[in-house]
Image 1 (cartoon, rainbow, N blue to C red):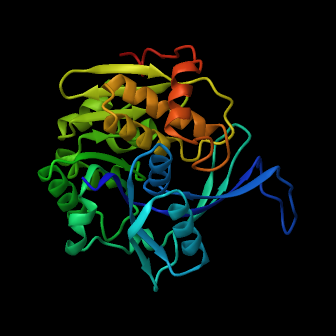
Image 2: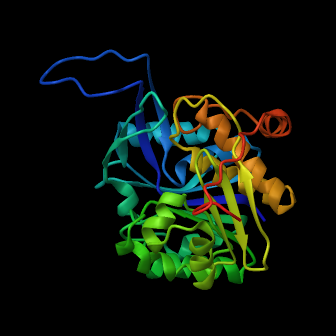
Length: 324
């Protein structure tokens, strides 16, 4: 394969500030400790994180012909990501988010839709996009042109060509379930947050939620549980819950995407499922220690060392929700 990781979908320009407890009234000014910029999105963050973790990575998405888009492209390239499959759309604006990070790491956001909703992968690009070990589709629910039949075609063809497929989304309400469930038969690893999965399924128990998506065709459902950890639920009967690492959280922006990239790196390195999950958790924990979607991750070796040495949280499993 030419690539190890193709990251398809939602690319966004982020401006983040912290800590923010409330917006100033009227035309007032509040002072913050830190402001930064980041490439984010359920495909954009994954692309840079995967490249940092040593994977030969192809970015597949779109930006506008504006300063934000230029910056996104420069950042991808500076991290060694191949941008030859990124589209620059003159009539679109780059998808952009203003992230107001709270003292506890939560990040309410203001988002402007843009090129993510306007791009579509043409047939002539499929050979390049699918020349990969792992195909990641991230951003279902915001990709107006790609959502639906085109995403189904992409994942179906990826499976026909022997790619491992992973899927994450930005659509955690029942209204988006039809978009997601048609993809499940072609997804090896469905990796939503517990909040997204609850919103889609209408269920609360994690075993029932995971079974819900496996029953719809996903080979495996991997639920990210925030500060609790990650629950892995495979159609072959393999199930386990791995607790989260114990870190001082600065910002949770991009943690789920870092998990996606780290989990894929584990697959590419031939790790067993539990080690792949732990490596993904290590990547997510490192991102949580800084501001921005790629904060904290420097390299594969650094992440592996963190995985092998960092303390994990005491297990917290409310019986009605997290029990394995």
